[in-house]
Image (cartoon, rainbow, N blue to C red; front, side, top):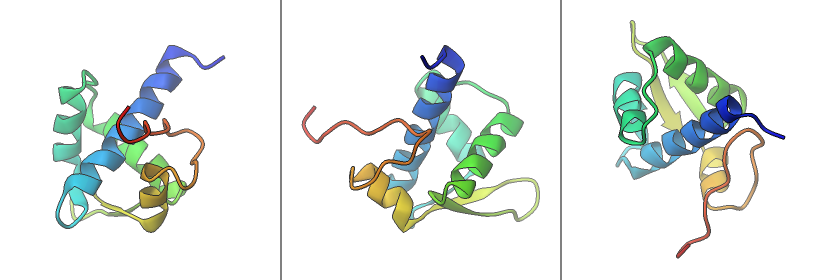
Length: 100
């Protein structure tokens, strides 16, 4: 059984991917990622957000650039495929089917 902290991380990872997909250039810096997570009741420190972005990069869902103290995440094709439900990336909540 998955514990609450892990379910929360999986939810956060899906929220991050969806937020990136909603951007015209599919990029967002970590400060805006943190704001987006707060909209969904996930209020965490910058280090936590950065660690989740690092995890998403290790899984191939995003690429990261680090111009200074912020991290800029860009959605990858693999991240898109997870959002389209074409693949499953373990550790990221599966998106709902369209219309659900």
